[in-house]
Length: 496
Image 1 (cartoon, rainbow, N blue to C red):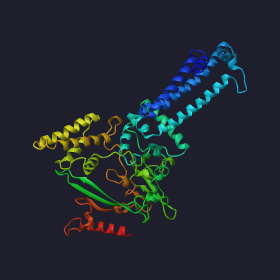
Image 2 (cartoon, rainbow, N blue to C red; image 1 turned 45 degrees about the horizontal axis):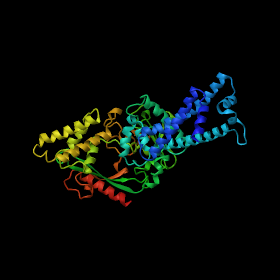
Image 3 (spheres, rainbow, N blue to C red; image 1 turned 135 degrees about the horizontal axis):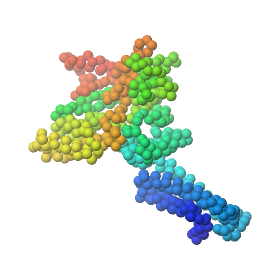
Image 4 (cartoon, rainbow, N blue to C red; image 1 turned 90 degrees about the vertical axis):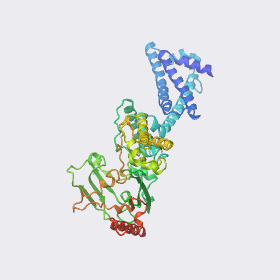
């Protein structure tokens, strides 16, 4: 068998070019099999190796297959012999002699062609499967995608493949994604990409086709209680509680609820400055009678945008960082303290940790050294007698602070604090107040309501206890009227 194959290879290799084609086909095929076996056994796991196995080897294989007939054609041109005469010269009269099932050369070529089709088919399927994996998306272009890969792994969607949101379903979506991916590879290879990667990503599939496969509007009902803890910069890092009863129902109670905007019966459209979804030119919504009510930004004097820049509101207009979530330094440190990963018993630990992670460092190594120096020197300087006994707690705080910095800051991509703000809520950015602002007015001078209780009942806001407003208000408390109003609003909302 092997000898017959070698004889066939010698006959096919008419000249130097033909030998190059045969070498490419043979070596790429053998290398593909060996590396594929290594990947199946878990010996080879690197994404860069996957690029070679599923992209480079198949390309070399096809190139070799193309070169071989080109070499035969060149030989035909050079010698003036017909292809049949060349075949007879290479394989002998018996090899090209016609039989019932065709000549021996024809049968061999047919079998090898079928094998080539099978090999290329398997390679193509494996290539598509590999390129759809989260590991490929996150690690193949490490310098570009490392920030997104880092935040993805710590996100609520860490077990959802990237393609579920960035590609969607259907052949059209697959083709578009591969064309876009080809340009991304070119951009990465020739350093043509922007730093940081600009947002929003306009090529995303509509949320109706991606997000709503799991989070459809009718799934949201009732309310959800959420308590958020912040810490003061005082010696004991005193906790402050904000508790919200979030109305997640998409409008069952009328024109309220945070998901009212995505209820199919409540279409909301808008135009934003430069199509960046940050500053609204106008917002319009369909009314119950089918009419359209538009609110125009009175602070702007801009022409009406192009039709392609208009947008129908969906999930990602608020959940713009649903997966690749970048934190603000104080919130990230607060979360570490809440989880007990940073020991709140260390004096001023919240203040000093936030100060340390805010420092401008050129690299992760510099950040690790700077954060450690900042936190440790504070305790050695201000608490010399206790610093040694607190060593383990201080060391753990340093490690967690470095983790916060490494997750959110990526100097190579010019990503610093605040580079990718979240529009969910309105704590760090305008968020909801992009539309719920009195600058947006309709023809009658009315604006979209900015009443806090549209979306949530407030049970505590920066208070010392999580449910402060459900407790009896002190007679002399300056915020007593608001305290009682918020309590009554909550009781009324849950009664409804």
